[in-house]
Structures are given as structure tokens and as C-alpha cells.
Amino acid sequence: MGDYSVIADVSASLIKLLRDQMTPDPIPQPELIGLASPVDKGGLYLSLFLYSIRESGDSRRTQMVSRGVGELQYPPMTIELGYMLTVQSPAELQTRSLDEHRIMGRAMQVLYDHSILRGSMTVGTLAEKDEEVRIVMEQIPGSSMLQMWNFADTPYRLSVSYTVGPINIDSTRIKTTKRVLERDFRIQG
Image 1 (cartoon, rainbow, N blue to C red):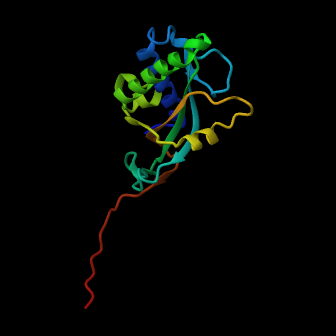
Image 2 (image 1 turned 120 degrees about the vertical axis):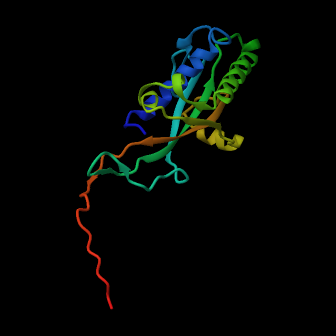
């Protein structure tokens, strides 16, 4: 479980993983991998863009969480995050596409090989709570990806989509309870 910063912690964990695994080959410097919209100018070779946050009905919890004597916390909200991974090589036109294919292939390999984020791969509340989150490539048809890629007049860039979750955001609601001190058994006859 995590507090409200867990979304940022997941994004930071993904960037940390990609930077650790993709530099210096095929990307020369870790700063060239970052969080950004695919249309942001900034010279990133690989950008990770959070485009969707949705509640996960499959992983939704309904049981209250005990927080000591006399306190129950409402269950956490369980969400999944949708990320778009986009590559943009600064290579010359003649080799740009092949360079982008290599970068994307390596990024996909890293996310596949580390499909469960945990332990030293996580930061912030994910690391504190020893949480695990799954990384799964989304199967989005080309026409749907082009519709998602609705960024004004920017031409489509090589992109792939991932779902990351489940992620829990703790509720701040607490219910106080009282201990049962006596029982009354009556037999009706």
C-alpha cells in the first residue's frame, strides 16, 4: 500500500530501471531517458508518458485493514497505470529508423526481463512498503494507437503501451471500533 505519491514513485521506478539497464548502450546518457509527453521537446531518446489511470476492479479490496486496537482503515484504492513508451533518435535520416528500432527493442527487452518491479528496483513508498507491481505490454491495434496519438500536428513516433499495476493508494478514512466486553446469550423457547 502507498500514499498519494505512489503514482510518482512508480514512474520514478520505471525511469530508474530503464536508465540502469539502457545506458551506455544503446542510449549514451541516463538523462536522455525521462518522463515526458511524446511531443515535448527536450532531446529525450526514450520518453515514458503516463496517459491513463484506471481503477482495477479485478484487484479491488473490500476488507477493512486493522490499524491497531480500536481502529480499522478503509481498504486502499487499487489502480493500474497506462504508459506510452516513445522513442526518438537524433541519428541521421538514413539510420534513424534502425536506431529507433534498436532502442525500442532494448526497452521492450528490459521491461520484459523485469516484468515485476520490486526491492531495489523501486523507490519511495513502493520501496518502503516492499510493494510489487507488474509491467505488461498492452496489445493496442495500430488504428487505436494512432487515435491515442492525438497531439496537435505532431507526426506519429514509434511507441508501445504498457499497463503497470496493481498499485494501491491508501485510504485516509479510519473507523473506530469498540472492544466487546460482555456477551448475552438468551434462549427463546
